[in-house]
Length: 131
Image 1 (cartoon, rainbow, N blue to C red):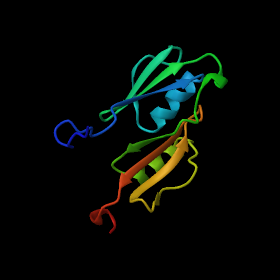
Image 2: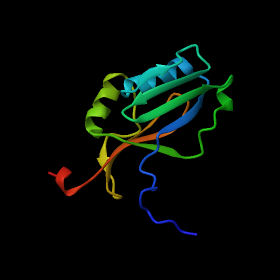
Image 3: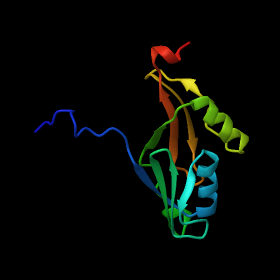
């Protein structure tokens, strides 16, 4: 049964929850990317950070080997990919690669969080943004 892509179509992902054995380091990492701590903290078993209307939840596990990171990649759409990359590198974060225009129509850069979760920060390329 197919539904039309009308009023009930999903527009974005609101929140993702990552396991972490490194709560303090993970909070600092996401804060360096512009997320703001809303709940929990470095010694908490669960923390929530927000940026715009998107949330990253962090749930603590005891051992680094209990963190599953090979399931996929999370893609965050941002207003300015290059500005975020500059902010991240200024904070000491190391991306896998500098921002580039990808063949699938996004300007993006990939980065791993302290637990090895695969993230991408991207913005769709339009005719207006190619000037």
